Image (cartoon, rainbow, N blue to C red; front, side):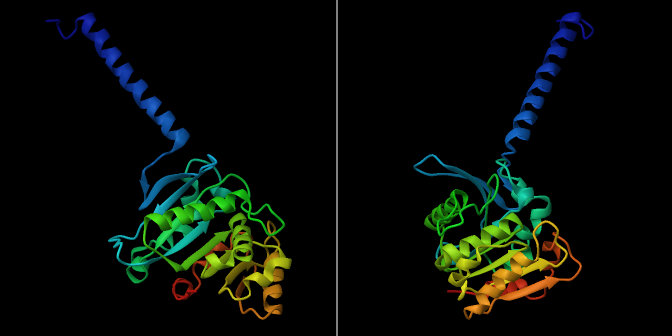
Length: 265
């Protein structure tokens, strides 16, 4: 048996340590590249692929104690630019967490058990000026249909929310597919004013900061004015002196959570 100071044992030990380090570094590198964490704060990591081989990563929060005999509401969160990517993590981290975790807080889930669906894309959500959905938006509707086929979702209580780039996505979806949603919360976004009439019957609570230098506050004002012109009654809260980061203020709005879950088609 080699002595503990035997060179052969030392070499073997060094090789073992080296292999462990290589394994750890390789794992870390792969993890850093894909960040395929199976579950974060209750959000499951999933990837949707359709028959055309189009892919959309998404996160799904399933209500604790889910009972397939009951129908649950579902909240969709469309991330802003900070959530863009393909890692299936950025859309539920950092400045996106208010939009995702507001609905999953234990006290909220206790009152309003609900699914939270958080898709991820690269680039803008809304890119089509006409009545057609953009490819990312179309994939969101396909992901929603896929989740509805697997779980018992209350189709009359599907809500869409989003900030910045996602705010544009919200406005775009509710003016092009209004029948899919029971209510919407667009934050510091904008949309196609000529299509605003399609969301006239939609319960909407929009938010914007009047000092926004990234997306001018006129974007929200114009959409709200256009809907009101055709008889709609959207709620609109404008934060004085607030720039682009209107979402921390929006999610502190008293009654917002209960207002959303009270809406149904």
